Amino acid sequence: MTSAPRTAPSAAAWRAAPGRPTWGIVLGDAVRVAALASVLVAAATSGGVAAALFLLVLGGTMVPRATGAPAVLDVACGAAVLVAAWCAVLGLYEAVAGLDLLVHAVATGALAALGHHVLARAGVTVSPVRPRASAAVTVVGLGALLAVVWELLETLGHALVDESIHVTYLDTIGDLAAALVGSLAAAALVARATAPAAGEERA
Image (tube, rainbow, N blue to C red; front, side, top):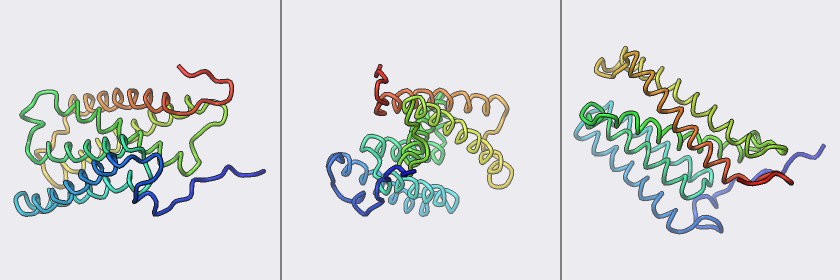
């Protein structure tokens, strides 16, 4: 049986190419520069924990570019994780009601869509029969997994790093619900952008 052709991983992801508009590369790289600057600022003003957080953010912003993600997804993922980190460092989640839920929804949805892109690029998630349904289910599943892992990390952070990290029952349930909503929204967008199988109607 002939295997499906895979998209060749290449350094082309790091330069302008057909389908990757220059504006997307510029904005995406601007987010990466901001993440790098955030590492330096955090190290100088907020200590090692904050600097380590932004190092993780910086690494995360490299993934969309390295995997050739669409420009909108590249910018959305980078901006979402960067804003999420700054909100945590500046204590905005405690100061602004509902911000935590909004950030959970947006960041989880964006990261779940990115996870689907990475898996689809590797040829392991797209169903030839129902590609749009497959994409939607994958995004929702990845979002749910990310949400659970995030809450586990928050619990570990509370126990081992900083007791001020909120891990109450209601906070955890609210975060999981917001992440699920964001994942469902992302699933709808990804499914709509996925090419249908032969004979399958697009909505």
